Length: 188
Image (cartoon, rainbow, N blue to C red):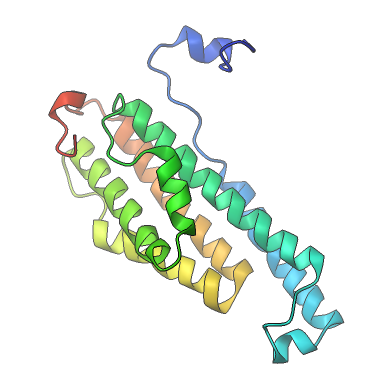
């Protein structure tokens, strides 16, 4: 590891190497851990099921919080990959991609918008309609609504299930050799 640049020697040796993809399995583990924490909390504190506005136990709060933070890290990592793959030409910057989730009301639109843009990138890169942008955005939006409104653990599992689809399609697109040069990309 080269501590001065923060990149491994392996990545420095390959000038076109992309950063690693997010580890989706960690999201699944966090989703299951959140489900278990919810079951334990309801078993130990049945009043949580009747009045959901009661302050949750610390272990349940931490499970929810860590899951959400890891989701934002994964969104950030996707956009780091996209920025590097397009030499900075991708319209959504990584920090913006993650932080816009936290803006009240607009965050609900944002979880629909950025997956649509990613799907459009994949389709443009492959030059065929592998992903449907509206359905991709809707899948992430529904998972996020389930996370916010119905059940945090199940919602997190759904979010990472949709993220695994995004990863698979993005890997295909980046492995494709039919990509136009960055200056010819339609979203530049």
